Amino acid sequence: MKRLSLLLAIITLLAAAPPLLTAQDKPEDQFRVEPGRTAAEYYNIGNWYAERDQHFRAVAYYKASVAADPAFASAWVNMGASYRAAGRHDDAVSAYRSALDAGFDENFIYLNLGNALLSAARLREAASAFRTFTTLEPYDPDGYANLGIALFQLEEYAQAAEVFEKFLLLDEENAYFHFQAARCYVLLKRFDDALPPLRKALELDPNVRYALLQDDDLKAFRRSPQHSQLHTETRIQPQ
Image 1: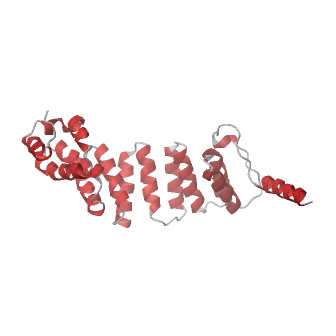
Image 2 (image 1 turned 45 degrees about the vertical axis):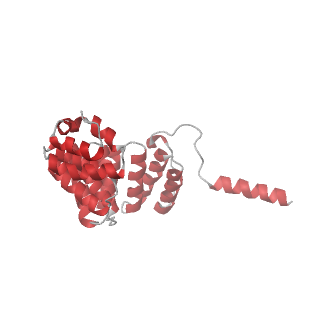
Image 3 (image 1 turned 90 degrees about the horizontal axis):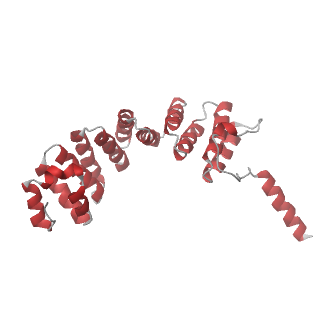
């Protein structure tokens, strides 16, 4: 009898849970969403699928949630996250902006929006979103890191270097961003300014020497007296 009760309990639990996909996930418009649920119920089911990396199915439920309540900002946010995870970056941007329109007021939304814009190669818009985030969260290094990357890709090297330096005030042990700051200075022909971040990058990670010797952006630096000076200090093979 106990065994039968346990079996019935398992069957009841499985029947109550949303079904798992047995095939590859499909675009959200191919999924049927059962009618008659509340916005919160659709939202929770969407989260259930998102946690299992079934992002298009999750989006279908987030869409049902905001159809039931367009002001449900968290559903828009999670829809954006699922779109990003599925590689639909422009759709993620639209979802994040809808979250803002719905009154979502947690600052991280601007970081998420910027990341989606950066992935969509909408660099100027990404930089704007990251600037907003750094204004709201001036002690969060992620905003400066991503803003610097966007500015670097826009070839605005002076601004990128300034932003990377702000990042390094908050996370001075990050070899990668010391190297990124140095790349900016080299591309600006400011070789003396490139020396301190290069020294620090090499101190933190000796493998930076391989990037220093191979990175195309540093060709001019490798022919400079400053590179010879760095070689003398660190025994990097000059080219």
